[in-house]
Image 1 (cartoon, helix red, strand yellow):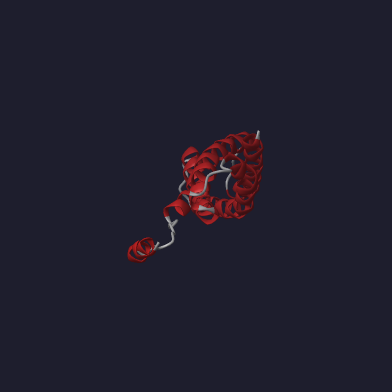
Image 2: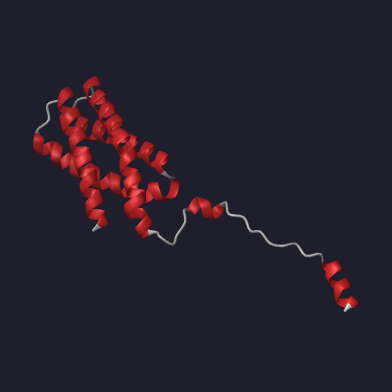
Length: 150
């Protein structure tokens, strides 16, 4: 259920940005924007939120979501409309910028509500690699001298 709520929030974020930004630069129908928002939501949630966010953190996942949104709009919309103009690049850049700003807050929600409950006993992979082991040092000679004194 947590993933359904998170997917719904992400879909609303992406659809809002796409409906606000892309029609400023291109003539795209509402149905195409809805399908594009759904497709981008599923891909970005799987890659950015479930794979990159738990392993590398909020900043890396936000950068990845910016890149995915930029390339997705640039190729996804540009290929269907067969335009390589500056309008597609502008729509892609400004959409990706707004999505990245929204993703910062969404990733905080994901870490607090979805990923914490999912990985409650696990730590991040990077933290486990950098963990050190500590122990008391015992001098063998002093221990053997204490045994002889007894």
